Length: 475
Image (cartoon, rainbow, N blue to C red; front, side):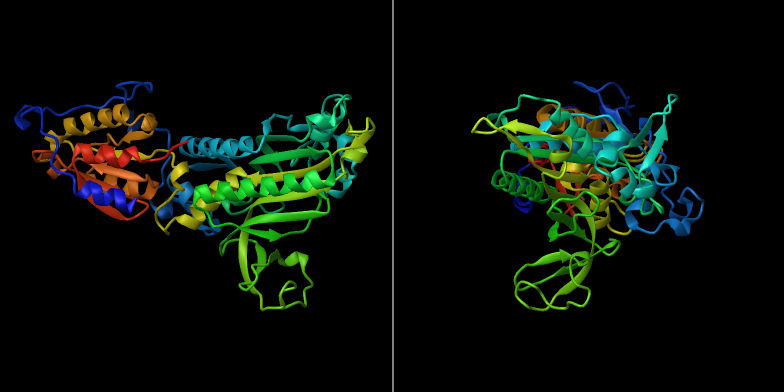
């Protein structure tokens, strides 16, 4: 980006105004359906904002309950709104960001052969009783009965359901394996003390993948393949995640790793060895151990938030539900399984927690709800004649940079000063904020471009703006 900005600074004045400034008339901006020549305007966005910190309170009405930065900021700018303890309305900006995250996840999962499915949230109790998890999961399992007295739970995970589904296919061959089946759905967990906004709630979105292989060796290869895909995902998002040795917990199996994002608000304690890169959740180690089990070097401790988890299950579930395939010798064999989770809403909140300042949201570039915010001059100001130039620039961006169609937002609240709208835009975290102010009246017009993620401000002609934005990656 620095190289691109340098080239843009050096651009000659390539454009001239096509009208005399005296002919410009104040322009009104309209919100229409997305499409050629239509403009998305901020005034029509449903976004209940509480931009003053003293206006933001939790569901219980106590500002002291806002215990982490991401929760406070997401409430302030109208990304989420509390519905009940541990449950939030996800508002339009958040839905856009989450849809982008799901697209990135889909790309990574389908690159390694993942096939997307969608399973019911309601899971019959008999499936969970078969694995003994109906009892072992305890009170975290949200249970209910239908009008016929049949028991269900709202699934926090779907090992039972997916294994029963695969087991129902009676003529599977080793030639068809591996299967990598995944979904992105709502999950439910009756958290005793939900907190930190989307970081720990009762209802959340998760990507869960379940794999079926023909041998332990093949299953280990699949395990490594999915872990590599997770690392690729977090690298694309610009998040420095650490893969740590973890406990198998209630899921079970023989091997498990967590993908942890180090942060002070994290509830997991991690130990890292700077010498040999050993890393683990402290729950997997003897509490008296102070040195690294791999190289005997000293361990450092940090906190983290779990954003992904992988398990090698073996035949723990396939043996219970008789999920079999016909092997190379024509004999029935049990499938070797793995399961792999990503906390979708948690990744969004964790990214905001890590990347943002105390006052302003910052997004991973690929996930920003809108890439560009365009600010025309205040109505009645000396620069009001530049309003039409701002509208033309909007149209030029959406036509000349196809990937940004639907990604440019016009802040049409022209009763506010440019300064007030810039302050809001900074808080919302648009990667690029473009202002049509005094220098837009120059010949050629120059626009003030704020690159939020680098902190740079440059003045560019229309052509410079288009060249800069042409490099923006979207999903």
